[in-house]
Length: 336
Image (cartoon, rainbow, N blue to C red):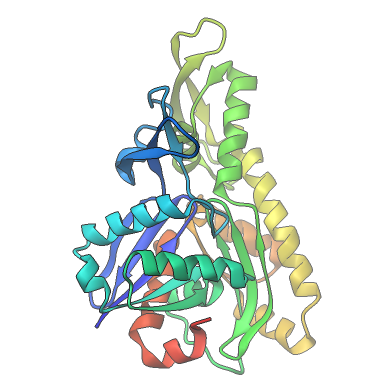
């Protein structure tokens, strides 16, 4: 039996194969050509090739992100994507019938979202489906042993969503999914560059800017060159930007996340709050790669912040542990 963990993110899809580790990480997007008639389209490119066309596509080509905030909003394109990804890791439709998959879902995902994933699995011939929540998977990705009696605190900051939860193997004590993440920073950076440098940049450039010099360190002097289009002349233009110049944008959204985390802690039962104060918080998700993130959150929350070497992979690696280990499959995975 082939066992996979799939994190179908709004920005990137990651797949873990039992016995192999993370075998795929590609953009969750497609380049589609609109056809005459209502709703008709032709898929031109998927994954990396589609993302590379962002801001460069022909007039009749759209770049579609078919997963929004953990919800499948374009079932046909998601099925095309997942079949394509499975084929890339040598899971043919015939082999898919002998495959068990655990999908990683945000906190609070309801029955309707799960029904969409069941339909997706059926479209891709997947034999057996499980679900697990981001917090469980992300903490297991830290190699943290879970028990029924000791709550742990997790903040997973992705591109479109942040999941905050306190939980144990017995279940989630308190949890929430916020529409906040790295994508909000990217959009703000696009506006910032236009207003302060008269420079139009695209989503991919904004993401690179954030990933290159995004920092919460107060004295960070990293510098990068940003290429774009001058809004007045329309000509190509380049400017230099420092980490300190965009630090306020990064902290704005991190502070919003921290506000919700503080509120959650304040409403915990006394014993759970005590466990959080002693155990600290486990950070994961791509946004955690910003320099100074652990120190900043630790200072704001007053607890130790535990990080992961590759935070963007924590959830899918933890989900891989769940599907690979019968004990965790029984404890933190469901089939409904």
